[in-house]
Amino acid sequence: MTRASDILETALSQGATVTAAESCTGGKVCAALTDLPGSSAIFQRGFVTYSNDAKIDMLGVRQATLDAHGAVSEEVAGEMALGALQAAGADVAVAISGIAGPGGSEFKPEGRVCYAIATAQVVRTETVEHGALGRDKVRDAATDHALQLILDALSPSGR
Image (cartoon, rainbow, N blue to C red; front, side, top):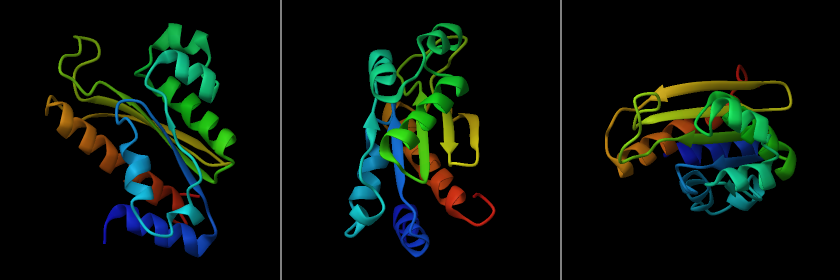
């Protein structure tokens, strides 16, 4: 079984719903979840917010947060997750913002991805340095990591 099918099975058993707010992954998390038959029972909508304007307009990310920390930050990922949780009316929301590459900078290198996972009880954020794997591999690694975060949040210890 794949992580996405594990999410579907677990969420169905709990009557839980999930959503995703994605930037650098461009909808790959949403696609992984909706590739599965029956996913409409746990997933109603997701958000691809590639630009800062989209993060503000669709998820309520504050301009002040973007100005202070930049789009690739745990602070922005946290606001993305909370905005998605509210907008989708979901039980679990994951958010992803990162530098897929090519390129990056000394301060925000290729492969740096910030994540947030939100439920009604808690918002957790983290940054993972996936490394300069190349754009496709960074996006795949970020998608896999985000799916694992959803699965962990659905576990009894994660909620």
